[in-house]
Image 1 (cartoon, rainbow, N blue to C red):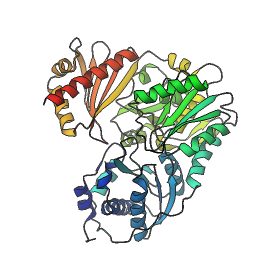
Image 2 (tube, one colour; image 1 turned 120 degrees about the horizontal axis):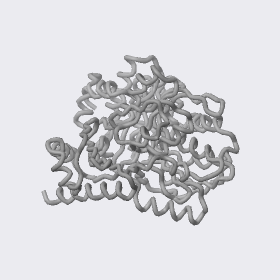
Image 3 (cartoon, helix red, strand yellow; image 1 turned 90 degrees about the horizontal axis):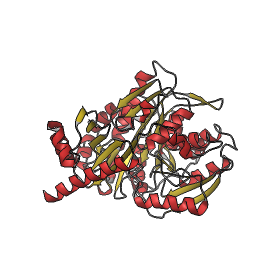
Image 4 (tube, helix red, strand yellow; image 1 turned 90 degrees about the vertical axis):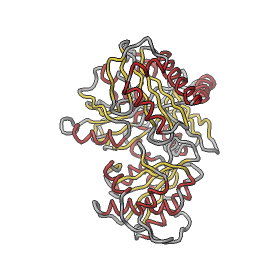
Length: 478
């Protein structure tokens, strides 16, 4: 390889940072590009921290091992030793790398289709910031030349530490009497979850393991997955079905009827169970978070874990019990908290296990659906149009900014009036009938997302479906 500046290689690759890491087509993650990202990341971290090791893990995508091999070889060429943890959930990698005070790279595309992949970067103290992203993209370090070898032997230390985090927190009979289905598909944590739930007393039924990568999106669960959960509940008499997205940092949890909870509702319930006082959540989350009256303060942010984490810094000045979550269900613990008489250390990155376990272990008698029923009746829905360019998304949002009423008419919502326009992230319109419609380009893929809020689940789904249909049909006619 010719000596080049890594920022130029990254810029030419077409890979960009989204709401959660650098994402792009698998074909764009060449060895040269993987090297450039790794060198830039290490050099940026070396300006802030002293370290001689790097931690790395991957998801189950077919392209992930080759990407990891290139990143590991690049790190070793810089005399950085690599602890390789194989296929594990992203939060498992974060738990161990933060405990070891070393940076980490997770090779994962999370929920996006298998022809794409990505890199998530962790500082020794947690997720990289937006400033770190800029520093990586503009690094003037030179590309290095080396040979790519085979992957190192997998260490099980990170997986074991992640399991111990929750086995030490909850008692061995905390799920006794519960029948839990684990929808394994291709999740990075599929080899861990059944054993964990069993050790906490549950009867576990493993379901839906796949040899092919399944791009589960916890914000836009497919009808196929919904129907499977209902069928599994009826067949196995389950109290809940638990699953995650591809890299195990976003949960998917159904109630006893097979109905999947929205991620923000699950995390709201978990925050109540954990006695969290103050929350940071993105603008796309359900307004019930404020209206339930449980939390002393709720800070709204742009969508993406870096923005939630950034809000923690100010919130921790006034509270010792701070957490956050996203509409996709990823739960971020901003401070240490006391749970069952023990200390649960902060983990300011998305985690799928904590919200599910916090809620399930809190149910002694009664059902999961009862917890949801006790909340104010505000419902959300979301979906997306795939292969919809960012340029088209931004053009549509600008149209709505220029004339919100015309946008409503275009979307088929002409009987409503706009009473508030929020541009925190995308375009979020509050209407005079207490409904909300929110359009936003995805930060991870060429997709347009639509979020809606209404007084019934059916109405929220209707708003999303009607809006996306109007947008899709218009794009076909242009």
